[in-house]
Length: 249
Length: 249
DNA sequence: CGATGACTTGACTTCGCTCAAAGACAGTGG
DNA sequence: CCACTGTCTTTGAGCGAAGTCAAGTCATCG
Image 1 (cartoon, rainbow over the protein chains, first blue to last red):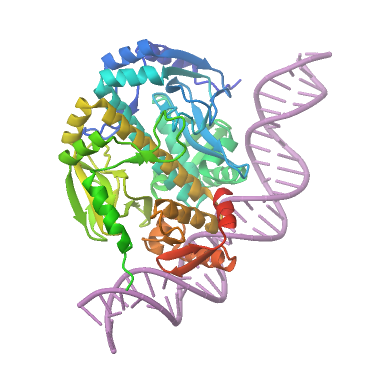
Image 2 (cartoon, helix red, strand yellow; image 1 turned 90 degrees about the horizontal axis):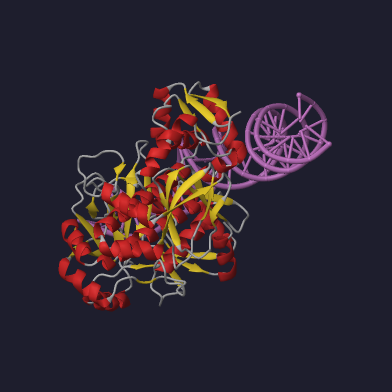
């Protein structure tokens, strides 16, 4: 009955979004007024990039690229959720980030991808060859500035991730993840939080054991802060205490 | 007797480095051969930036800028060490990064700095007004690409930081910090690791209590892996086991 | 040499990890 | 449609390690 895909009422929005070309969301360097995330690309830039990019579809669980592979392209997510991770020598898996629509991934080091990226839900992504992109940068330095802006934004996200992991209590970490999922979810369904990934993925992102994630969920339920409807849906029951928990780092 | 400054035999190297203009070290996107860090800027670019930048000196402990302040400039470190941190609502302080020579900081979000940056040692930094830099980017997209490269490199560092914090054992985290300090220290003094910051700074970076840092130090000594000469100097005694500990994430 | 801040050590508590076993779910093929 | 099967999830018991509180030592600077 429940699938890993987004709710059906979203496919329409996705389709129109795709027609407008790739989009990057972030916080511009100098926009003094803007408090939140905004579209970084102009209409012209999006149309231009749309001509340079190829649209690719991946089913859930499909690996987009592996760590260490030749990095010949970067990707912008049109729709779907992916995880970016590395397997450590100890056998543990570290999820570095969950990435959503309008996020950028595939920025390389020394010509190689550093993390493995795998689709969690069905994924639509714009693929941009690095040589093509470099050429576009040369012609439009302003476009490059937007990409720089997005990279800095992801740097902030990574720093935020370190803050999440630094929390001692598992329930606080879990609350911050739910908060992130809520921010990235459809603005319409504000009542429910869609959890696309498995408990194991959550544990690897939060740097917890799988069991600790489950126990933290039970604790949030026991305290009446969050209800876990099923494996992939949660509902914030007490907004005030939830926000307090998220903020009390 | 001991001061927080770098060893004296370094001032010469620092002086010559400063004459050559600002420098950014990182891993280029596409250099397939290069395994390690290289200079990202060309001689021409460094000279150009040197003309656009003002050189600033800060004593140890001086705050370069505070989180939330108007972000009118970015900085490149010529010599010295700084910490980039935020104070959290709980009263805890999170050190997001230690930054060294050839590192970049001050990339803003919405016209405001996000972290506070404070000098740990006496600091020499190149100050680049954002308007001036944006203008330079417009004329030299290649220069902008190098900055993008550096930003991505710092993104990797932030992800690495999350991996460090994710380790369960304090000794492993401490070993990774020492490893980082060794990498960024003078190539000459390979025997000793210079620790410029306080135990409290280390704790705030590693997401440990101050006491846990001390206990982890004692443990490394007891195991014969590292000697702590004084508060600001350590010596790797058993390289093999040290490297194994660093790698066994 | 006294004051202040940084560091060290010990005792006790808490909470997450490991191991183990059972329960719920989705996809497969009969 | 249903049993089968592997994966994902949940729960419990015991252990270990980091946090907290408290007391003290060391160092550095006036």
